[in-house]
Length: 69
Image (cartoon, rainbow, N blue to C red):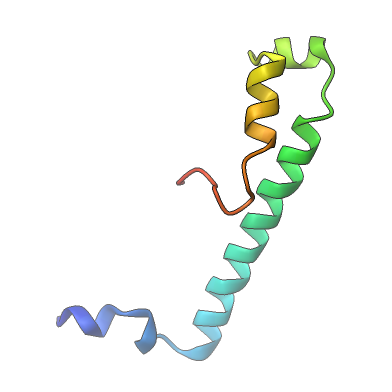
């Protein structure tokens, strides 16, 4: 198979839209989780093994800077 044949340009439009929607939903989830992380109390942060500084640093990251899956 030619490399270009596997390109997203050759996928049907509905598949490209579904992929885009999944990425947008994923970015929204990251944004929501980071907002929530910023509001956790100290005992909750301890439960998940984070310091206040580490949580604040993670919460300040932009939503597009998401971990790879």
